[in-house]
Image 1 (cartoon, helix red, strand yellow):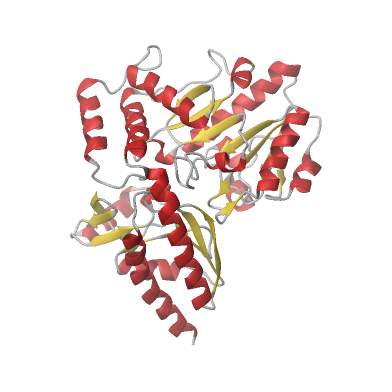
Image 2 (cartoon, helix red, strand yellow):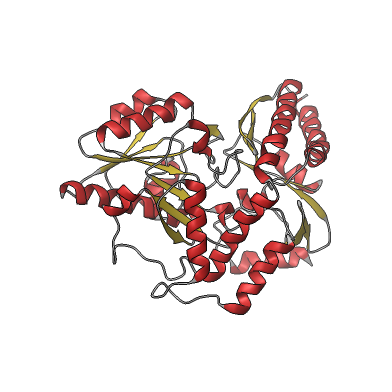
Length: 401
C-alpha cells in the first residue's frame, strides 16, 4: 500500500525533493511510524523542527483548544495569542519588536527589507549593499536565495536582488575586505547548517559585532535552524556575548505549525518598516501563535535547555569515538544537539541503510551526516541510534575493503 501511495505522489507532486521511500503516518515521543506500522528512531526532527518530540499532550491540547476558538482573523485586527507570543519572543531573544511570518525563508526576506529600509531612512539612498557568507543557506525565496552562499542554488534564478557581496565565514579579514560605504548589513548564520554544521568562532562573530558598531552596519543573525534551544541556549548568539540588530527565527518556534518571525531592536524598528512596508495574510494568526506560546512554555517546564546541554555532550563524545574508530570519518563538529559527522566519502548510501534499519538521519552537503534530533532525547536514545548507525558503518567498511 505504501508504495502505491508513493507512486501516486510522484504523479501528482512537483518533483522538487528527492524523497526517501517512506510514508510516515504518526509519531510518539522520539519515534515515527510509517503507514505499515514500522518504527523509526527520529534523529532529524523534521529538519530541526519537532524539538519537543511527538504526541506531547499539552501542546496538542493547546492547538485543539485554539482550533475551537479562532484560527484566523487577518492583521487588520489584534488577536490574543499573537500578543502573548510576541512578548515571549521578546523575552527569549532580547529584541524589542517582532513580526510573525509563515516560514524561515519569509523571515529572512523580512530581515533584508528591514535592513535596506533602515539605511534608506538614514541617508536617503537606495543602492545599499549586504554582505553574506559563502556556503551559507538562508532559504529558497528570491531574497533569501540572493544571500545564500552557494552559486549552484542561485544561478538558475538569476538575476536575483542586487548589491550582495560574499565573504568567507569565520574569516574576519575577508568580511572587512567586502565593506564599502554602501554596506548596510551583514547577514550570517550563528551556526551554519546546510553548509556543513560550522559554528561561528568567538573572535569572528565578536569581531563582526564590533565592525558593525563602528560603521553603523546592521548585524542580521539567521537562527532559523540553530535557535530555539538547539545549541544549549535558547539562541546560539547568547553563547558568544553578542546580540544582533535583527534576528530571523522559525523551525522549532512552532514545533511543526508553520510559523517564523523576524525581530529587531527598537533603534532598527524606529528607522525601518512602517505601515504598508511589509505584510502577511497568515503571519501571526491565532493558531500558529498559540503554538509558539505552548512551545516556549513547555521548553521551560520540561527543562529542555538542561537536557540539550547534558545529552549534547554525550552525543559529541560518541560521535568523536566513531570518528576515531572508522578511517573514512574525519571528525565531528557542532554545538548542543546540532552536530555533523564529517566523512571522507558521500553519505547518501549510509543514510539509506540506516533508514532501512529504522533510523531517520539526514545529510548536510554530500559528506556530512547531520544530527538534529528532538531536544528531549535521552542518552539511551543516543545509544539506540548508535546501535543502528554502527552496523551501517561496518557495512561501509566492508564495501571499501
